[in-house]
Length: 398
Image (tube, rainbow, N blue to C red; front, side, top):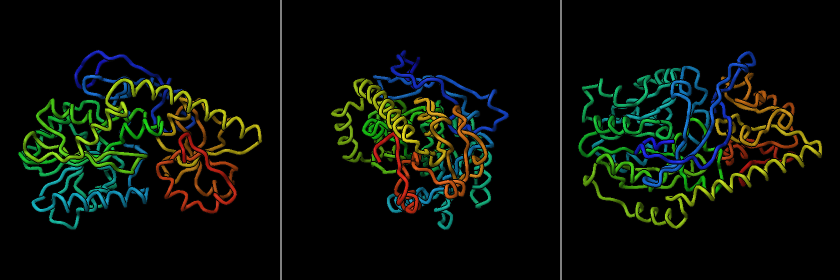
């Protein structure tokens, strides 16, 4: 295994086993053709970077049938509204041009439509890009990389801010991404992005954050080290609650902006908690094994009591839980979801049927396995009626 940034040789320290495409919800006729790969992780000591060894090609994951829409979550709509307000308040004075990477259905960019700001989304998945275009948002249906952005000569050195949310960890070729940033950003331009945070994953043992799309799990230490290699520096890091614990990073060219004290403070915390070194990986591996054992015992006890268990929310993250822990149809009757692109299909790898929310209300289980645990506040508010009679479980503490 080689580090995707430094090309140094690193050893994988853990395998989650044979894994399908996390968002590859599948029709029965395609079961035999399903794609699998070995989900293995390694760590670059040089740049403190937690990363996958192998992963499917980006086009296999982000295509015309991508079944994730940011606008399907009230929590994410609210978060993106606040994110855009923060950008306007902090950097809005001279903000004229903004590009969003992995803009999905335009939920974030929609917040800039009424301002005199020229916004452009880069979104590789055709179906979600079309939703964004229908909202009147200029959307380029391509991957954001140097190869693609250099074609837009009129934008060279014209962009004030390039933003992203939960998209940069999906991009295997970060060198090409950074070259693209350098091509587009003004001299004092900023790259502002949010990603699931390695420190939170370690703390919660939320190993479901590890799947094909999450090629990297970033920390403040790794972002600082990566961007320093390419003439950029991390000037701020702000913890976020989204996705079970994320971090907002603000990056500029070296010596162009003042560095916030947050950066030093979080780096000290990461050293203390072994987030920036290999010791943290070994502890995490042990915690994952314990978590798996505990979860399987819990399910076994419930099944011995003849309890009916169903999954709540057919998330991409649930693919890792089900396949790593080998939980199938004999344990979970079905998974309910609101996304019409998933309903009537089957979960990747374990082929548990995906049903509508009406099916859940008409066939209430004894226990609901909350796969979308990071949206628990929103879900518990919505499902008060079920909570009065049924129980919730998850592989993390609820």
